[in-house]
Length: 417
Ligand SMILES: [Mn+2]
Image 1 (cartoon, rainbow, N blue to C red):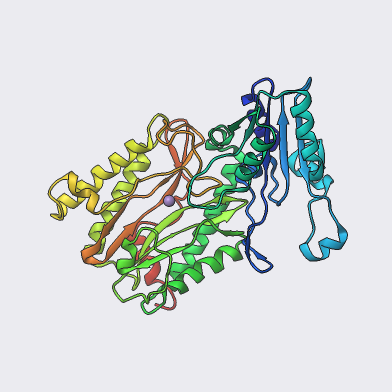
Image 2 (cartoon, rainbow, N blue to C red):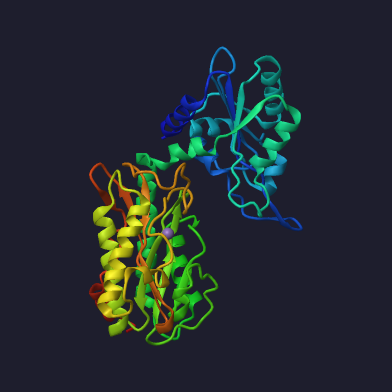
């Protein structure tokens, strides 16, 4: 089990030049109010490389000395504190999980860094300095990188984010297995939703049905805030207030996912609240489904996400032209305004080094065409998760029902209907 982390670190080590080192922190809790903190999330590069998700840890890799070094720093276990904070990871556990033989306490890290800087003159230090959103508070690794620059102004700091991201783009067998499990749980959640959905329910009750079931299945969390948009709310792309009553004749757009060992399923399905699609809803649904199937049929190594989005727009536009809703492809942007795909992994919108690179075997991407018809209060999205293979792709969520006839049959066969 820990061999995967050994292999992943070796890939990163191979990217380090001679005389370079890497320091990556797991992070610290972010205070919310009084003695409360936001739920802790370890730096995902750190988790990817160590298998550990606790606060106040660090990974040091170096090629600055005679031998390459690999040291994990953890918090010491203080029994008196553990009564309050819960058990910390012990050295033995850290060794077993990460597969690292050298594990020290975090208090020793600063000394080690200053020793390396003073005696081994590193040519560069790789740290996670990636900033996605300049308005948000800086992440812990960015804070530590600033601190480092202040202390060692002569040492160049380089961003490890694109390097580790490039490695994370290709999923290994362990990651694919986690995905299958996250998607299986998501399917269970959606089965419960189909079983119980009816007009008059509140959107948050549908959310509760989904989240009850995935937690019951062992999912640690949702992949992202669950979206349940009925009627016109389905047209709002990241709707998450989920506080409207579901009307008879509404479509209900669900965009959701179970998270398992950090891996984020990202699935969308659109169900008729009363169990039957109207003629108009059905016509639009068939177009979205056609686009979803066309993307799945074309996704393969060498294609780019941009090409898949173009293909998706072609199919959607042809459908709307057939229905007389639009006259030409240039109008499709009024009804479909996002890309059809993004990378998925430890992040729902996963890391990449180049967004529009050719797809490669082992990448996992979403396939999420949609149509958002404001004037008819119809929002439809059908989203699957695709694993790129040698010759094409495997739809990891193929078991999650999306055929409209089957959905109607399932909903008609319920005891409560
Ligand atoms: Mn998505």
